[in-house]
Image (cartoon, rainbow, N blue to C red):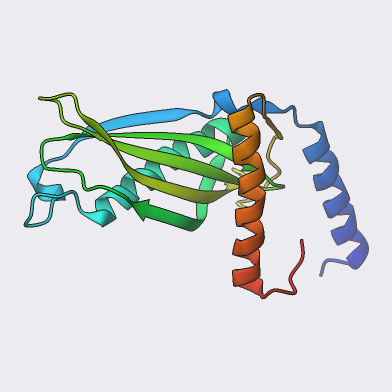
Length: 181
């Protein structure tokens, strides 16, 4: 049985470990992937299935979280996903992700999805999503501290602030309005 003293010591050591982590810039997490939309991925109208978009969003977001944390990560939540325009059969789907904010063991990753008609070159912003990941220690399989995020540009600072607002809403919905972290 673990004593309260041992538990507090573990928390103290974990906090110290987090303070020792060197920050990483947003640019270190940026990830991108491109796929072509095939018939098996579409509905009867020739549009990319929403579930397929969600799968691709989770994959590219995980890439950014892996890059930032240098560890295994698991999806904790998808706060928001907005389908603005459809992606058609035969089009390219380009996904871009980056870490928006780091908390203690979790990271919010923003994802933007674009379609591209390879014949005409027309590009459309089709989807936006925010996905939260938790870094997992390879040996203990428990959440582990994540390096701080270094924000440099006005856009990165804006994303950083907005991520804190989304987290506040997410935690209020999960634990009730009185919950504070």
